[in-house]
Structures are given as structure tokens and as C-alpha cells.
Length: 133
Image 1 (cartoon, rainbow, N blue to C red):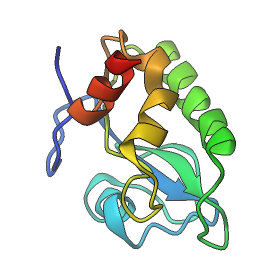
Image 2 (image 1 turned 90 degrees about the vertical axis):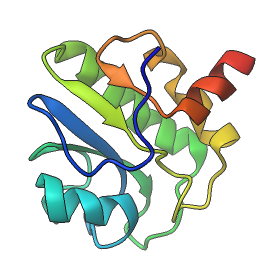
Image 3 (image 1 turned 180 degrees about the vertical axis):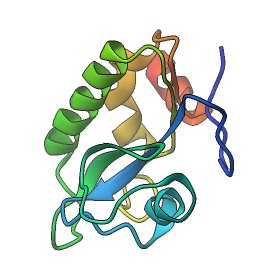
Image 4 (image 1 turned 135 degrees about the vertical axis):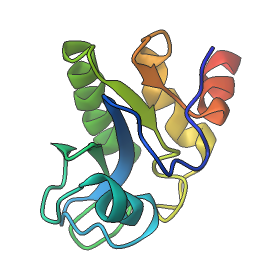
């Protein structure tokens, strides 16, 4: 099984950097800042594809962490998008586990439906948690 890297600093053609964002569309810290600075994430775009990135909201417009059930809706949107766009390979970062303050055990199960998708690479830590269930 392939995993996304812990630190992603370059992308190949058709690779997409998947990061945790906020509903204000401000990408100035953590992986969101990396997405903005290096991979074309646009300020003001809170969810979805911009540049070579895909934003999944984990915080609200006040930059407070969203409840897991709300984050799950955005993760499900992402999984649907990835299924509809097999030409892309999505490199998922450990969204929600940095500045949003959630644990891997809380966030990883949200990605269970992506586990067997060939074009979605999850962090190894996410995969381990999903497989433990």
C-alpha cells in the first residue's frame, strides 16, 4: 500500500495536495500555508480544488475547530470528488491533527471510504487506525 508523505514539498503532474482549511478561506498557517505558498491554494476558497490543492474545512470562519460530524461532510465531499476525478492522485495530509487539535484516532475514520481508492494516498497513521477498526 502507498501512503502520502509526512512532508510534501513537491508534486508530480496530476498530484493534488489535500489539506485542512477553514471556512474563512484564510490559508496562512500549517499545511494550508504550504498549500497557498507552493501549490496554488487561493485565499478565499474554503473548500475544493484550486491550483494543485484540495481544501477540506476543519475550522469555522472564526478559526475554531469544527465538530467531527461537520468535518465528515467535507471529507465525504472530497471522497466523491476523488472518485469522479481518477486522473488525479490525491495526497492527503494529516488534516485536522495539527492546528485544529484533533487526534489521528478522531480524524482517520472519516477517510475509511477512501482506504481502497487507488488515487487517494492517506497518511500511514490514518491507515493504521482505520485498519484497527
